[in-house]
Length: 276
Image (cartoon, rainbow, N blue to C red; front, side, top):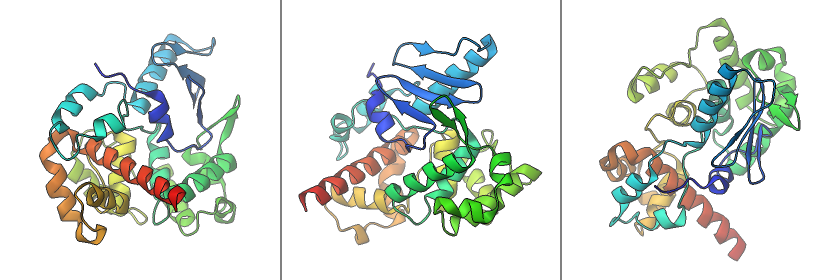
């Protein structure tokens, strides 16, 4: 079975101050910092058996440890996407340990570059997060709820700060539920997009990184541009429906394939800037 490459997975994660990778993946959780080196888990001595079980499940969820990469690679073999299995061998979709984190990070990425979003999210964590060792715990809804809008804007979130504040208030009051595991993707998108600050792109991103649903933001520029590069098209020739026509036949692997294509686009854009 293809081994998951922690270095590659963490490279695609948002460096928000809640985790680090030094050969071991370390993640700040509610009860302390937990580590995983690809085989072994490392727990604080104070953790109970129940907390250790929860930590294992969360780390597995974050890193996608149950992803059958061999099956995925066999599904794209012989296609235009086949080269991606060598290019990103061992890569899984990283997810957020907490649903609220996934929603906030999705909103923070609206209409800005991934690089800019990463900086604002890291600032937000410093503003509202609690220090756990040398890492931070991602702010809870109550932490963000205590910040004024002016304080929140110090993270350079722009109009997204108001969205985050508004949605956080809904979550605290129980008007917005994020436990959507039991409903399908389309129903989840319909539910989430009823709330101001959550469009289809944000809903799809949340369902991917917060719940590991098999969805992808077909209208995303990076995904459309990646498809265009692989199929030798111009980006403006690739519309949302074209992306879906290409990816939907891959069934349960369409979300992971979309992620690989997006990573390919990001990598080639960075290389292009270096060459330029």
